[in-house]
Amino acid sequence: MRYISTRGQAPKLNFEAALLTGLARDGGLYVPEAWPQWSASQFKKLAGRPYADVAAAVTRPFVGSSLKSAQLDKAIAAAYGTFRHQAVAPLVQVDESLWLMELFHGPTLAFKDVALQLLGQLYDIVLKERGERITVVGATSGDTGSAALEACKNRQSIDIFILHPKGRVSEVQRRQMTTIEADNIHNIAIDGSFDDCQDMVKAMFNDPKFRDRVNMSAVNSINWARVMAQIVYYVTGALALGAPDRAVNFAVPSGNFGNVFAGYAARAMGLPIDRLIVGSNRNDILTRFFNSGQMKMSKVAPSLSPSMDIQVSSNLERLLFDLFDRKGKKLGEAMTAFRETGSFAAPKKGWASTAKLFKAHRLDDRETLAAMRDIYKRTGMLVDPHSAIGIAAALEARKAGKANGRSVATPTVALATAHPAKFPDAVEKATGIRPALPAHLADLLARKERLSELPNDLGKVQDYVLAHTRLGHNR
Ligand SMILES: *Cc1c(COP(=O)(O)O)cnc(C)c1O
Image (cartoon, rainbow, N blue to C red; front, side, top):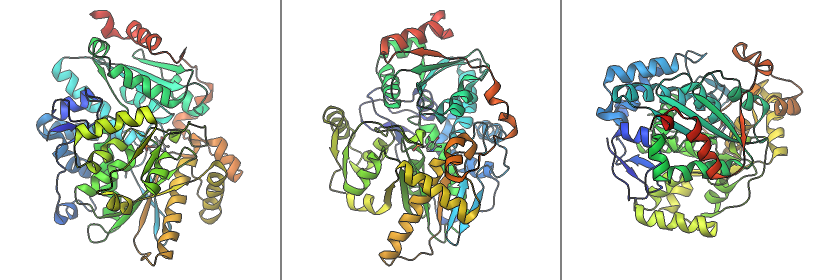
């Protein structure tokens, strides 16, 4: 399997190189040259298999010759051995046609662990074999940071720097990052928004001298390997509910579009997914895009679901690449124009099928709290604000479908992306109940924090990375 850049101007890479490279040198994102095509019988063979077996089968064609089968199996076993639930991504039935998929049983209580635990293992294997070290620099709106730090902590071949917007992540999220004790991890609070943090990471990638000097890599969802790892639970979820013999919908609370893009990839491989339902908070660039075909940037505003407080959804570029008939140069020009003007219109050709596949719904904070309260009242389940947005979007899509005379029999899986205890204030506000942290994090609020504060200034952040990465010193 070879990977090409969405901007068409960077070299084609194999899996190993795409894993280590992150953002392509032309500013694009790596995508498979072609989607593997699976038959119904290939999917059927995986029904009822353990999560690790499905993960091995689904990732195998994407990894290609970069890893031996035994290496991949070992990485998968180690990655998912850290989960507190044997099913890794268990389904819970909510009503006659809605299921919740719990993706929060990993070490940091958010779905990011599913991809990042595997990414950490893959890095380790590949870097040891090459005798190389890397510096990972990432931006987080809350959950990526702790998941990436947990996945990379104490790894000899990695130094990791995580930028988060100061004061804009929850206390639990911050402490999950700043209380990890390991010499190779660095937390930086930036005086700015998540988009500022993400822009700085992109700018560092677009600075070849800096990038080469520290051998920089990315754990943000621009890294293809993360999308790949996430395809797996779309497959296990759909198979459990009757695929490939019947179609399934997925509802996904979305920020950077990484999670839901994995659903798109699963569908491109042949998994019968009828609808991908996107939920957003007041930062609703995605929902406006799918409802109008127009993308218009606006300011990021803080919300109860901080992991989705994003205006520029990086992974959308991977979808746009297909919408642009995989013409990278044209897409590159459009993305540059979007950066300059803050607006963008989807190409007319292909839009009808995109608009049919993706349904989108937005909730403000008041509606999010109401959704959390409603789910609790109806089912007794406590859900975090992000998951509640996905569930509400699923219910909204079902209502709209009924109005259009669509069959309601198609099951929908709403992805629960965080454990309720990760956002205890919002859960308590909505339901009156304060969810307790699982045992392994029970003393989190008493642990000592370690972090540095820096201004929203690229030069200062680069200096900090150079001063602290072990690689920078050696050269
Ligand atoms: C990251 C995150 C999201 C958004 O996922 P994307 O892949 O960025 O769309 C949603 N919910 C939670 C809890 C998250 O941590």
